[in-house]
Image 1 (tube, rainbow, N blue to C red):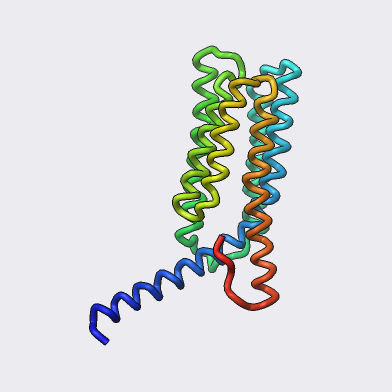
Image 2: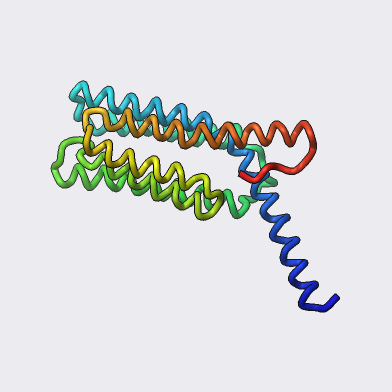
Length: 202
């Protein structure tokens, strides 16, 4: 075998092994995403209920989301299967994507407040940010996440048209976008555990 052919074969093997390992790591997030879909939907539903009740207390909304974010982080550390204490490439992408989304969301809320606008006047921007985040997931991990990016983009428009119920809409989108892939990943993990075989690529 020529040296060039051997190097190409070795590169292909490394790619397959790396992809399989990343898919296995992704499966560890399945149950986490299912629960995050539920907690985020509850949080957005609670946000909309407070909004309809005329609540304009920023600390109250911050408290609600502070509890949810703390709970979500706790679920990650409690449920995610350890990977030797080292973050894999795909996990680094998950963390960077969603921490960027969280920071951008709080920044949007702060800008809305500084502009003197009503609470959540820029609410649809949160759906745009989540669409970008899911689009990033689609680029880095699985093309199926592009569907969820499209869903959040559509929800952003719907939120602008139906502002009274905008966070109910966003909560439903989050539930679908996290629970559906979460179920698929968790199912693959259970199947792999029973068969001892490799995971299906999402």
